[in-house]
Length: 168
Image 1: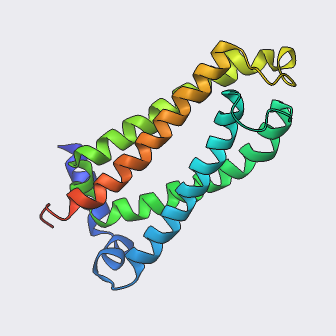
Image 2 (image 1 turned 30 degrees about the horizontal axis):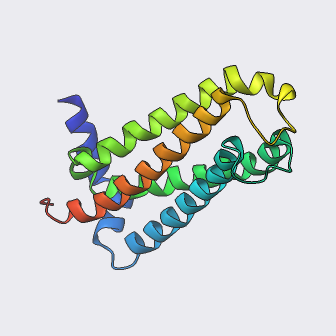
């Protein structure tokens, strides 16, 4: 019951009402969200493809990672803020949407995969940093990450198609 109360409170806030009832705010925020997610997924894909040995094989992984990941975090922050604003507009409906729930679980799994990579595999990067072939555990991290992020995008698209059937 507490979660329902929170979702209703969020739905009733002034910003959520403006987003939901205005003609232009939702599409503008959604556009920013899509652009941010595009940057997040594209930049992560660059790193993942290097881990898989399919791209940028002539570059040190640590350098590629250092150049891309800080920008990825900025884009991820923009995606979280814009996504939270979109969520607030119809919080209860999003929370009851299976595609949305799956997207949130996948984002959590992406974070777990990244944490495991950072805590285990990346610590030994000096041994394979310049090699075109990365170790199996690095390839697994990159492959899993790529699959998760593709699924996140697919679920995000599914949300748009399934929300219109929901009341509110």
